[in-house]
Length: 629
Image 1 (cartoon, rainbow, N blue to C red):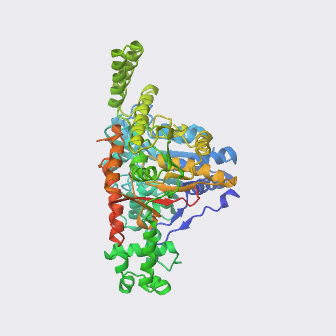
Image 2: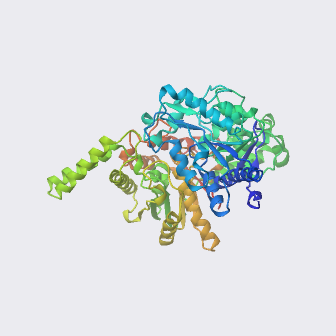
Image 3: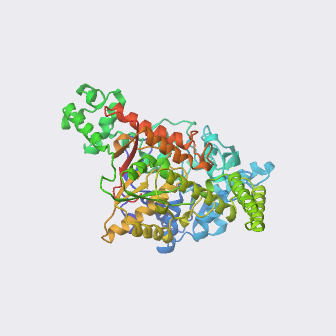
């Protein structure tokens, strides 16, 4: 029981309709959730009772599952008394599809623990249409015969769905066949290598059995969930947001990581709910928030503005208003840095999770570092090979075959390979992973594009490092957890290059999760170095094509000139497989170069609005605080 009482650094968030707790890291959140589950299982097993649990699919519960597996292996957690019900399944997937939730649950949890197979219940996505109603009714009966859910673990969709109970699902709905909302299908498009391949229907346990559970844990991870978290926890109960029905439940907790909690009032504007300890960070956030609310620049705010927006306490303890605004103005002015690595030659290393994140996210800063005569290295952490269209792989295979035919170079083998590629692509079912051959070709395409992009901004080719981390090498969106081999590769690179400054993708809104995993691996190495007493490099965090830092979080802003932004655009254009239409663009319809430019110019506009100098564009960074994520 000692591990169950371990401090998880959770902080309650005031002002929500459902009890909500924010954790500093995903691992702390998962540790807490797993130990709640473990405690319940042990308690009921001691009384000779089974524990009936409903589980979701998706990336949200994965870290919790891994902690449960660790508890089973290392702390003798006996899960043989658990009865599992998987809450949903796609309808109409070919048998054996890797996207099947049944297969996913087996691979991610069941095969690693001691839950008997006969105690694991999954909906059958291949049941005949005429038998769907009977199949769903019997699934509901199985839940009832098991005694109902003792605990349900839930994730939340971008549209507020829980399970596959989409918007406007009935409060008392039962297990049924449903039509997937377009937002849901778009959100899982990467799992199927394109939205067109996502099934239009799914089977789901209804809201009725879920809300009848004796206990519910709702998990939300990442910045992309922040908006729907606000609607669920602070809005009214509405069928438009099915998760909002949880407000009516008597024993539910919401567990959030810091990015998912950012838009809640208790996290973003706590001074509106209670008295607060006015730290410098909170003063800066409040003053910048007041600028946004009033439409005024910092040095135009007055005492009436503070009082009219419930900032009496700030004014009373840290006023007058002129002093507060001048202080925040100077803080923001100090973030502007034309030379982020200094003016003396240093070694810098940019970690790029995908082969294009370097130029998309901080291409202008890389140009500045190179022009400042720093030794600039770029480490491409994954191959990015799943994000290439089939037609690009076929084109390259045909090009090489024709090239070799024209110049008399190994014509037989090249032609055979090209035919293999064409056949593999032709026979591949929608959503089916690529063969090893095609993955290698796609990886080669991305590698050559990365080299071209880096050379375009002036980086030396021998300073480019392609790590091809093992966790990514699955051929599917689902990745393995970071392991010792990943850590060893990063450690070896850092020891070999010995950079004075490194740049890490801190973009936790990345819908693929790769940025988060890569940052986690880098920080693991750095924390090991710190524990060993080794000197750490300066660590700056950048954000990619998905989201920018809010003003109050920016600690360094690098001005980008029109010519530098144009050169950055040219470097992004070198990634031709991602140009015009990327395979996994997310929900943003703009191309990556457009997102990058809009983001950089938008940051500059935001600085101008608060009264700072008007720049053409800015790239923003935050400093790593020395903690895991």
